[in-house]
Amino acid sequence: MEQQKRTFEKIGFRHALNGILAAIKKEHNLKIHLMAATVVFAAGFVLQVSATEWLFLVVAISLVWISEFFNTAIEELCDLISSEHDPRLGSIKDIASGAVLLAAIFAAAIGLIVFVPKLVRLTF
Image 1 (cartoon, helix red, strand yellow):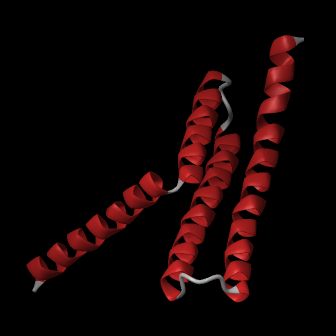
Image 2 (cartoon, rainbow, N blue to C red; image 1 turned 90 degrees about the vertical axis):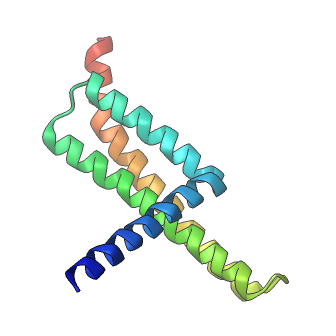
């Protein structure tokens, strides 16, 4: 029974990983978010952000990624429900997309709060 449970957990993890990789391959915006996150992590190391700043940066990046994954899943589901134009499904997609935009604005604000003072100190 224990072996069966471990096998099930491995399969569940594999499905989750497959979902992440499939979304990254399919969604152009996720590639942009990946590039942005890479830049933020590199800047964080170069500018030696504090542990608290890292916490805010990681939470902001995670919020954008999680929002984008939910948005992608919602869009997939809407497309599965109907291939024809339906204003209600369009509204659902717009709302999900709006959540990603809000998360990205929040993340950009956190990035500005963390990085601008450090960059100002470097230049002056």
